[in-house]
Length: 164
Image (cartoon, rainbow, N blue to C red; front, side, top):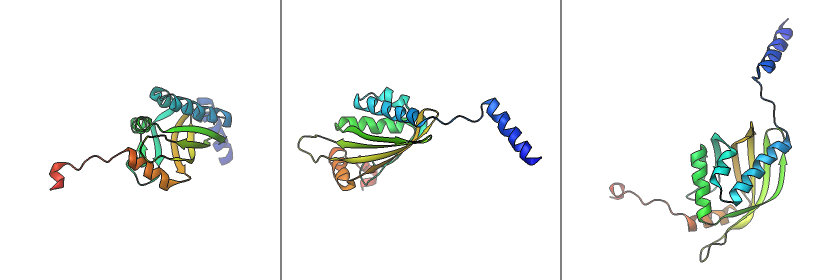
């Protein structure tokens, strides 16, 4: 009887639409490809369109832009900052299943008179209902990434009231 009850509850939930169907790997890759297209065009609205409002984006390292960005606004501010430094990305590989996408890409900069970075990056995305809900960024050369980010972005000065 218990198995019948569980099956009936599951069927009812399906009929009511309470269980979202997982997207295909190809659909999930398309979400990340759309992200890259928007990023390459410095289109923050396009980037926002593929992100869940409560997205979490994990940036590795020890530099002014590292750490977890929580929510679409923080993630968009991060990408706006990357655009100022002229950081570019070129996808090399995509792999996916029904909930995750992995991209491997070349990420580089051409800042004049400052340290640059040119390395391989991997990102692991979690996709739900056609939106990026979480991304974890991994760098093949974190030391070079830290040097680049420190050369491009400074921490805000310590407020005068705290400097004394």
